[in-house]
Length: 252
Length: 110
Picture 1 (cartoon, chains in turn green, orange):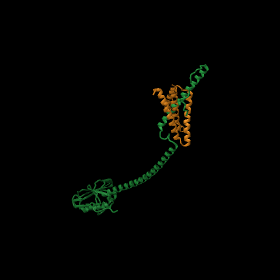
Picture 2 (spheres, helix red, strand yellow):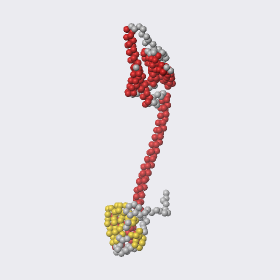
Picture 3 (spheres, chains in turn red, brown):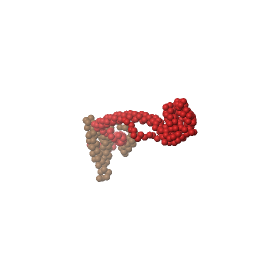
Picture 4 (cartoon, each protein chain N blue to C red):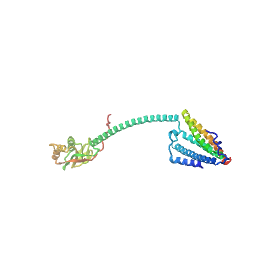
C-alpha cells in the first residue's frame, strides 16, 4: 500500500497561472474527482454495512479457514455417525419393547377372559343369558336339603353354567344344610318358595327338571309344586365371595 | 461533504438492500473494507494537513483495496490466508491509528 498517501498530493497547489484553459481543465478534473470520491465512499459504506450484516447473521463459519472447516466437518461427521448408531440402538430397543408390549397386552386380554369365565363359574361376577326361572313351592315344608341339592345337581348335569337360589349364588363349593322347612345354603337361610334362576340351554334344563322321577316329580310327591318359565334373558346377579384357598398353593 | 454523503448513502443502501455476500468474496470483503477505511483516514488526514489531492485519494483507495485483497488471495493460495489476513489487518490498523492520531492532533491540538 502506498505509504505516502497522506503525505503526497499537492498537485492542486497554488494556481499561479490563471489561464482560462487551465482553470477549465482543473474544474473538470475536480468534478470527476468528486464524483469518483463519492462513488468510492458510497461503495465503502455499502460494503461496510453488508459486511457487518453478514457478520451478524453468520459469525461461526463464514470467516473460518479451510482447514478449520475440514476439522469441523470431520467432527460433525463423527457426531452424525454416533447419533445414527444411537438411533439404530433406540429403534431396536423400541421394537423389542413394543413386541413385549403387544405380547403382554395379549396375555392380559387372555387373563382377563379367563378371570371372567372363572368369575362366572365361581359366582363372583354377575351373569346374564338364556335360561329359566324355576319356582319351587313347598307349602308343607317337606323338602329336605337332599331334595334341593338334588335339584341343583340335576341342573348342573343338564348344563347349567351358573345359578342362584333365593338370592344365594351357587358356586362349586355351595352346600345345602339345615332341615326340611328351614333350609340353608352356604349358611344363609332360604325360604319357600325357592326361586331358582339358572343360565343354560332353557329347553334342555326344562326337560331335565320334568323327567319322570326327577325334581318336579319329587317335589309334587311331597305336596309342593314346580313352575318353570323359560327365558331368553335371565340375570343371575347374586354374588358369592371368592373362596380363598387356605392350604392349596398353585404348582408351577 | 461528498465523502460523508457517499458513506451515509452507502450504509443506508447496504442496510436496506441487505444483499448476501457471495462466497468467493467472503474472505476478501472485510480486508477490502479495512483497506478502504485506511485510505479514507489517510484522506481525512491529508485534508487537515492541507495537502489533500483527489487523484491521490482515488488511486490510493483503489490500490489499497486491490493490494489488500491480492495479499489475502495469495495467502489463501499458499495456505497461510488466515495469518496473512491478520497481518494485513494489523498493518492497516496501525496506519489507521497513526492517521487517527494526526487527525486528533489537528482537531484538539493535543
